[in-house]
Structure formats: structure tokens, C-alpha cells
Amino acid sequence: MTTIQELGQLLRRKSLSPVELVEQHLERIEQLNPKLNSFITVMTEDALTQARQAEKEIRDGDWRGSLHGIPIGLKDLIDTAGIKTTAASARFKDRVPSEDATVVRRLKQAGAVLIGKQNLHEFAYGGSSMISYYGEVHNPWNPEYIAGGSSGGSAASVAAKLGYGAIGTDTAGSIREPAALCGIVGLKPTYGRVSASGVIPLSPSLDHVGPIARCVSDAAVILQAIAGFDSGDAASADMPTENYVATLEEKLEPLRIGISRKFFYDELDPEIASAMKHALSVLEKFAKEMREIGLDVPVDRTLQSAESYAYHADSINKNPELYQPETLRRLKNGATITEQAIVEQRQKLTRYRSEIVGVFEDVDVLVTPTTPVPAPAISELKQNPDKLRERELLLLRNTRPFNVWGLPAISVPCGFTNAGLPIGMQIVGPHWQESRILQLAHIYEQATAWHKREPQTLATDLRG
Image 1 (cartoon, rainbow, N blue to C red):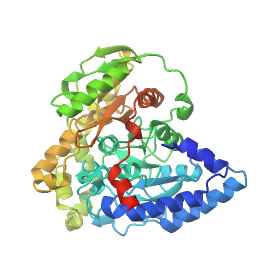
Image 2: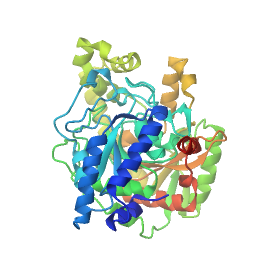
Image 3: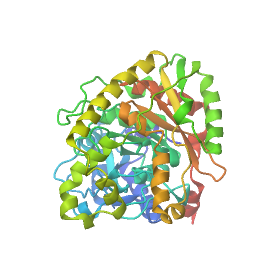
Image 4: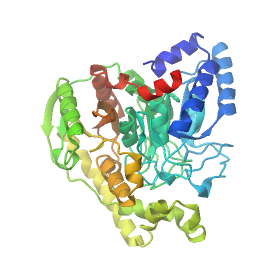
């Protein structure tokens, strides 16, 4: 596997052209997107223009860093000036923003080439990416299975090498869950670490923006470019960032690793339980202590329901037919929530985020399975809408609480099922400690070989 940093050096030394690199990716997207349905809009001409500009700048000695000339995708609810941003919905099928989202501006400043807008669960309200005006996303490891959601197109694209990374969003697990199901890395930073300005919201109190990548160092490179205070985002925190890439090479002192069996390890699929047992045995070699702890896990979804409905209320009243039926049903769940209940839930959220700090007096990180079950088959979920809702809730069970707590969390590959479907492990740290979880995830990644596997079905397709 060639990392973004390694590729960046090839581009810097002019051993590889950004234009050639982007052309290769555009060709691969043309070959594989019909099977995966991971892109809504492929920004062919824009990407080639950006690549030519990057090539000229590098040739002139104006190298901006590791992302300069690297193809990156965007979940299609992140605004791009002059390019459609649809949120995978008929409501926004012709919506063309006039301004870039903050994360897009920062990627452009870093020299990244934005290659396209990626499919998702409509308005990010689900964990399967099966509910989309543009059709369901398919898993690169087996297209008969879901890619996860809501950033399913972004995760599928990265796993299938249709870009070196992507920007996703995460309200209940929508970066980490699809990353786990597609066998790659997904990082949800601390709440407020990365600006959500210019990103179509699901629940502003819980929304996070972060990188999806093929390895931990690539996630660190992307985070480095997009992290930081944004005065245009009310939720953005004016907290210092670190050199996330450099910290990966620093020595990490053995950590106290917390394992909360109740809730996070309940009713695991046997193959996930086995993979986690092995993963914890690897982590134990680098740990000061493996400590069993108890956590009072918040599970109420009232605030998410209320905030999601508030954004869409006028449109639902005027044009309900513009929503997929299941999305409309989910949004309407928030219609009867009172203002007083919303105020109370926001007060609870503040308290939860304050109280969780105490947990990290006893441990340095928490480790859980990212999902309790592997990816289900698309046909199975299509047959039964109730099964779809139930399975999505289960898939997001272990990730959702960390949005409530606002903690940084990363999913890394830790195994495969007998059917060849990926399994993910989640590492969680204290607020603002992205470096800590990146370091431990990187150490684990280097001690194992899971991240080196690639979907063989797609390799066969290309040879054909």
C-alpha cells in the first residue's frame, strides 16, 4: 500500500504527475462506479483542471505538502461552489451552492484534487446508504452487501481505490460504521475540532466532520489539513491543533486501555467477538494495563430527532414527495417534540460531555468493536423495512454514544468474517486527544496486516 505521504514525495520529486494520477482514478471510477454506485457526481473537468494547476505549482517549486495533487472525494452533503450538492435527495437534486464549505476550502488550500461527490444515505439519516434518490451503495468486498452509512459512498470509494481519501460526516457513527464495513479507517474528531460550516446538517448538536482513508497515517494527513477553528461555525472550538502526522512517529508510552463489556460487547456476532478477542490480545502487548470499566451509556435519540425535523419542517409541509418514504417517516418522528424537551436534552448533552471527562482519570483510551455485527446483505434488508431499521440501529449502537459525549474516535480494520466481510475496532480518547488515538491505531495497524488486504472482486473486474 502506498500512503499519501509516500505518494506526495513521488509527486514532489516529479516522479509522478498529478494529471496522470487523477486520470488513472477517473478511469477506475468509470470502470467500477456502475457496480458500486459510490459517486453521485464525478467532477471530471474540475479535477483535471485542479491536477494541471497542482502539476504547474509543483514544477515551479510551490509544493504545499503531502495532499498536493492527491485525489480526494467528498460526501455529497458538503457544499462545493458551482458543483451540485444533493444530500442524495430529490429535494436538492438541482441544488448548486455558491460557496465552498470550510473543509473544501481547506483541502483546496492544501492542494488536494477534489475528484467527486459521493453517494450517501439520504440527508445522512441512516446507517445503510440504501435509502438514496440515486440508489443504494454497494460494498466493494461483496457488492451484494451494504457499504454502511451514512457515508457509504465515501467509504466504498476509498476501499475501492477511487480516491486516496474522503471527507465524511458522523452524527451517530456515519464515518466509523461504513469504514468498518468496508475495511478501512474512519476518524470522528472531537466535536468542534473540524468545521461543519457549509455542510448540510442532520443534528447540529451531534454532527461531526472527519476523514475516511485506507490507513491511519492517511487519516492523519487529511485531519491535519481540515482541523482548526472556524469563526463561521458556532460549534467550532478555538482549541490548538497538533501535528497529527508527526506524532505518529513519536514514542507512545504504554496506555491504560479501558474495556466496557456491558453494552459495547453485548450480543456480538461470534466472528466479531473472535476478531475483537485477537485484537485486544495485540493491544495488550502495548498497554500498561487492560482495565474493565463500567459506563453509563446515553441512548436517548430525542435531540437528534428534534433537530433533524427542525431543518426539514418547512420542506416537509410543502413538498413531502421530495423525500424517500423511509426518510420522511424518520424525520416526522421529531415533529411532536416540544421546545422544552429540546432545551432539557441540550442541557443533558452538556452534562454528559462534562461527566465523561472523569472516565479518563482511570483510563487513557477506550476500545470497543465498531459494529456488533458485520454488513448485512442488501436483498435481506430490501425485503423487510422493519429489518432495515432494526439492523441500522444495531450497526450504529457502539458508535452513537461517542457523538453524544463528543469524544474523538477512530475505526481501524481488525479482521474479516469467513464470508470475507471486514470487521472494525473502535479506539476512543479524551476530548482533543486525536493524536493519542491516532498513535495507538497506527501501532495496532503496523502490528497487523488487515489494512493491506484489498477487495479481490474489484481487482478481477479491472483485469477483465
